[in-house]
Length: 187
Image (cartoon, rainbow, N blue to C red; front, top):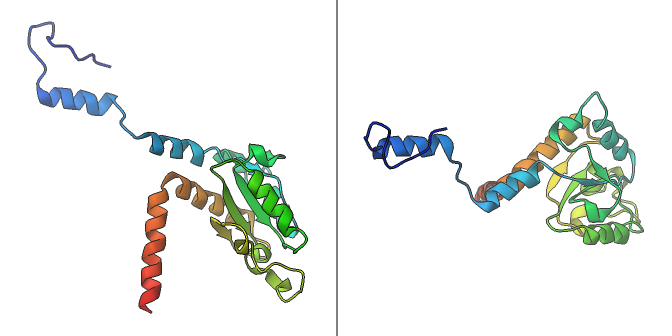
């Protein structure tokens, strides 16, 4: 690494082009929001919470075959106060709805929600039942949906990578959603 000095050893000064090259090669410029977004997107702690068969696939994702740890997401927390992501995996009944909402409220900000499986997204095959909630988005702000019955571990990994992009580039994702809304209004 070169040090920028007013005079070189031979008496010549650095010109503006040399100074720009030194700065470009040795200085990293960013904002605090971008840096914190990068940190948050790579250290997601998930609350351990499974309601049905999708929870088995969620736990299978952290096995050696799928190696969930390579992304840094293998830490499942037992307390919502230590987690920043809730994966709602399985059928949500009306009896469980207030408990899920309470766990969500106990999580610290910033917090995210991922719906895993068709039961959590829309009620699944049990949607006509009197005691099944027709999707977690009726009472929680869902960030990422992972469809399937049950979804494969690869789909959950893709959901985590999508959430990583949403955390790291929130304006980019919001812009894409607005663009898709505009396209939908055209039809």
